[in-house]
Length: 281
Length: 322
Image (cartoon, rainbow over all chains, first blue to last red; front, side):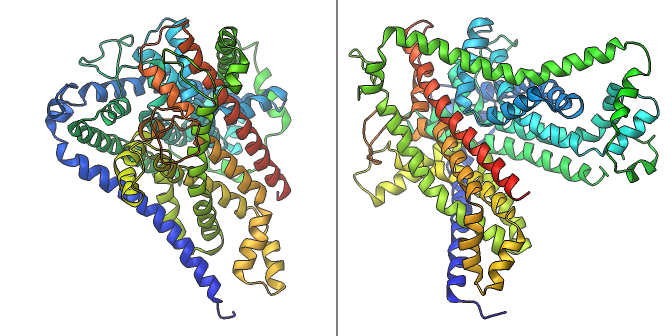
């Protein structure tokens, strides 16, 4: 090897600095939010309803609202997404329809989330008379995460070796029995990993919920799927747009909670992937 | 082999595709099998749901847009330079919102593109495997941070910081959310560009080395040009994300639609306008209700076009180097 030219070194230094800048921004963001919010984070904050006084406000309604909404989202999106993935991988023949479905799913994954909010506002809130409810929020979020769930489920299903299907057919199983008893159990960890990652994106989304008209000031817990609700990102957004300093601290504390929730979900997803990945083949 | 304990271990050795007859045999083994057909139909419906989602989006946007243009002439919409539907004196010129969106997106891409490409070249051509395994996931964490948190960061950290450097800057502006948006988009740009560079055949690099080129020349004069369609695809997808990004600009850019390219004053993007109207109580059937769908239509058409072109470009380089 020739001795490296100085430009080689210069590029490596610049490239590394670019990456250091990026990672630096990430660390600054996390440190900044924690410094602003960590002291505010206590039991009172987690178990109180919003208030006009920043020091008495809390995220109980937002936390419960987010949890209920995500549960509904998973309830809608998981069966529909896995169903679509099974159809595309196991049933669909290569024709114009399956091609259109595939291109369409790729495009839907790139549609801005706020557009899903407009769709939810018109279809779920107005035409299906769900009102500005948990149900409407869950359904809108389900449409938003569906493309992601379909794409990751398809990958998980594709990773199941064809020989397993053949063995099952050879033993006389029907196509559905093969999928139900052989393919799905093997693909399940991959499907769950993708679903958790998709849901963790939905938890952080505020734009579609604001568009369908989720409330920003909720001093009660939802008691049915048709109950009005608020969610954690909306609560943070609301506090960030207030002028009082105290509410900005509340927003930072809420952000810390949101980041912790996301961290836990991602950790579960990574744990699932690492635990089951090696056992597939 | 958890969950499939009954399978003989031998099954893994036959790596062949199922013969065409296998499905047919499985299907015709006994009777009409209504259950199987029912399941097939149910799964098919799950599959076409995505098409109905797209059709639903297109239909409601067109429907409400037509409702809007019944009341407001397209001339006002495309040639007026003021957007004030919420004021007493109403103007419906889309340009201020387009301008705001354009400005924040340009700033975001000015941050994301150089850093993204440099990172991609470094990760794909230079970095040792060990460094790569640390840096890639770290970049991906950036993509997972909720946008409200980015918005908070832009408004309360970056803006005060920039105000110290550029004193005349307003508390709400395009620059600060633009920069933060750039950081948010960076992982997309860098990982898509890296995929494209990774797909460049090794023989091209070796050919250049054989001619005596240095690594830097190979990277930027051979690999980057060869991966250009993929990098362009990454750029377009990044722009599409920037245009559709909502919370960062809604929090930190302000709510004043302004026909300007000055990054230091408050502006309003298309997405932020939809948020602003949605936060108020806007009854169905009013002109304000129509406006958010018109703006949504503009957003949808531009991001959809960018996504389609980007998708097409990515497929092209995959075919070229397959």
